[in-house]
Amino acid sequence: MRRFFVKNILFVVAVNLLVKPVWTLLIDRSVQNKVVGGQYGTYQALLSLSIIFQIVLDFGITSYNSRTIAQNPEKLPTLFPSMLSARLVLMGLYMVLAYSWALLLGYNGRELLLLLGILLFQSLNSLLSFIRSNIAALHRFKTDGILSITDRLLAIVICGVLLLYPATANNFKIEWFVATQVASYLVTAVAAYLVLRRIAGVKLQFVLHAPTILGIIKQSLPYALLIFQMSVYNRADAMMIERMCANGKMQADIWASAFRLLDMANMFGLMFATMLLPLYGRMLSNKQDVQPIVKLCGNLMLPLSFVVAIAGIIFSADIMHLLYKGAKTSGAHEYQIVFSWLMASFPAWCIMYIYSTLLTANGNLKALNYIAFGGVLFNLLLNFYLIPRYEAVGGAITSFFTQTLLSLAFAAACARILKLQTNIKWILALLGYLSFAIILAYGTITFVQVNWLLQAAVFFGVSTLMLFVFRFVSVSGIKQLANRE
Image (cartoon, rainbow, N blue to C red; front, side):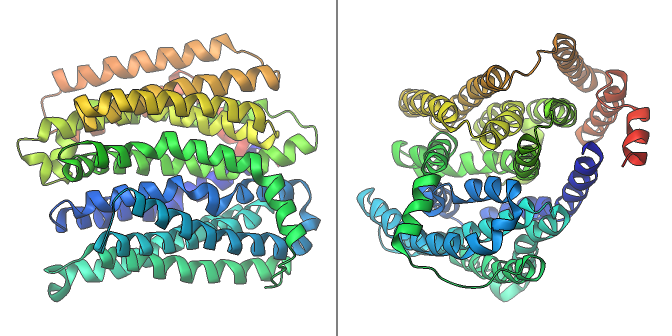
């Protein structure tokens, strides 16, 4: 199982490395630099609003479906039509509720048209995630990995042409960016369905049987509540910053600039979670010990997350200055501080991907929802206090403390419920590696007097070698994984 997991996760990471950083750093960032007047800040705030309302759009169906099909693959042909029908009903309800809330918040005119496009591509993205959850549940991880980049690959091509062709580049509109995503998700969702039909024999049928749909929604309710609460404490910051600050659009722009890079880093954590949910589900169903996979994920994700977070903090000014026009103005320090706080939370995100996914696969939704509710209260209260005083910086500080506390709570709950052994030696090794990486980072920028990109390369290179010294990765282990069946 370890060999199967490592081979597939390496493939998924590799294909995503080829596409998603290009989308984030070249396309999404270029759009923000191209449009003016805080348009991107408004887009980011509306995007956050749409994500918060994904409780209605998804209603936990994707997580519930992935766990169910992973444990009972034979149910897919009969369950798919009902799940698809429930999904389409919820898509309509989602768009009505999100649009109504936007009206109550005071959005109007062009903002509402922009929101309509965002809700469309979010609906299509959710539909795509549902179809992909079936493919992943069947452990077709490589196929799912290819589909996971198809939408972004299409969007890169379309947006790339619009950004490079002089006639469109000089008049680029944020609406074009949204329309591109609508088209890309639509094409990919159709392709994903055709793939699923070929490998599992599902049929495009709609079963609008109210008791069946209500039954699915009822079973998915705990998942839906969890997704809603996670959306609030993960995404409310941008909307609150845009609405609560005097210069809300510009502050939302600053937040979006910093959060984009954290979001890119989180893509790789999300890849692990996407594979781990059906993998954990199958292992738990078969009464297999999940602790080796948990430790393996910790060895792969946590040391690297420390390195990424420290690099983000140490080189924050250089990174922001390189990527964003706004960071070259008088507000440069604000960009740097927001980015530093957000990147500092990255290890906590990785811990949550490992342990909250395990609790989900084990069906411990009650514990997950209690912890998430605490996270929502803490996040909102701290945001209401800090954002009016420190604007985007206040939101970033809140995000760091929220994610850190939640990650510790999920790990503790996982250890208690699933009786995971506490490996003190492993925890000390992680803390030792973190301390070493901090010292190495400051030593690099102090004594290696070269361009900051070369300093970063030295830091990453030495940190990677130290993974072997601290035995998170071993040559013998790599050989065993390569040879074991």
